[in-house]
Image (cartoon, rainbow, N blue to C red; front, side):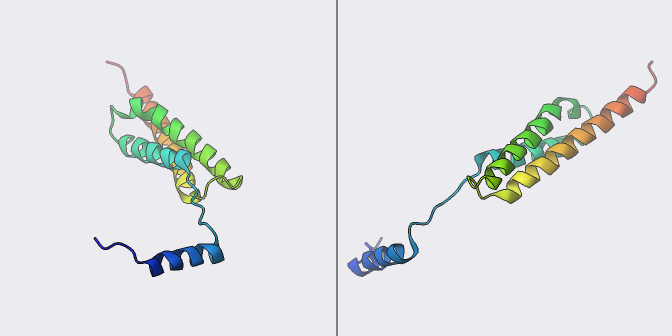
Length: 109
């Protein structure tokens, strides 16, 4: 590996002086909501597993809403992940309700 030259360090310091330190924002709650929502939505199509995935969909929607709130307050910048968490979490819950209604309508043996 090559060591950066002094000119590289000067250029880096000059760019920071002009543009300032780049601030990286994170949205862990929005990302967690997106992951929970996607997993919940994917597993909602499996008949017997759908009943156990309901909390995952609710958690995805709640974490997505918290992440979106953080975006609106300027504490995070990952708005797409937060919205995806809300949408997929709600869809997962809707699919759970449909499965539950279908199972409840089946005749008993």
